[in-house]
Image (tube, rainbow, N blue to C red; front, side):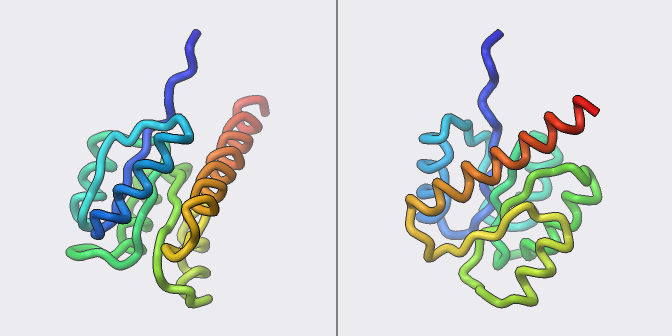
Length: 135
């Protein structure tokens, strides 16, 4: 049986950043199933598509990423959400992780580092899922 591709939702208000993330996740063998330019769209698309991973910007119009993160986690506490931001404030990082985010990536990170971080987070998540299934 062929393994299905990981299905990704990208929620980012800047089109050029969405394009970069799309390129990175497709080179990882994943499929971008939806893109959201604001927090309200992100939440709606999450409910509609139930993606395997969400890459979520913190600063977005309509609903900020932390609010969206908390609502996604209320829908599915096992959701895989990676926060993406230009902010490097420890209190913001802590709030994201405490709210259920699996990782926190700065936008000014190189494309190679973004690739590594997304890939590593996916690997860590899948290891936890496999462990849960075998217990």
